[in-house]
Image (cartoon, rainbow, N blue to C red; front, side, top):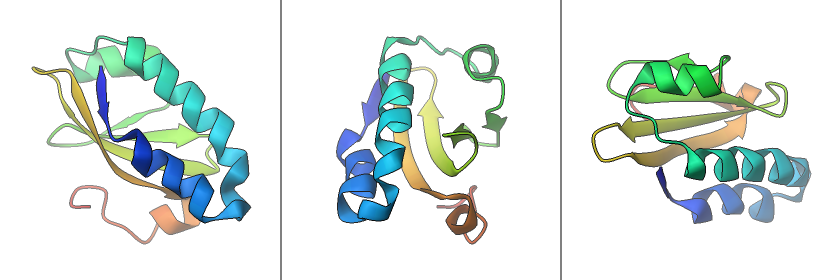
Length: 100
């Protein structure tokens, strides 16, 4: 899969030292996902059983035991993932995963 953009993920822990503990779990997700070949939401669920599949290619991943949430939009035909949001669970509760 192609992920757009790693810089968005890095900014999360670089811009806020309080979130430096997110670096390893996020990079683990990133490395795993780069090697993936997701053609459908079912393929995502087979790799990440706790992922929440939403409408319009949106997926929410639990990072670091659900301490952080990652919202992406996936174009399955082109195997491209767009990072839409990374934040704490509390921050996630304040956004609309379908429109962010």
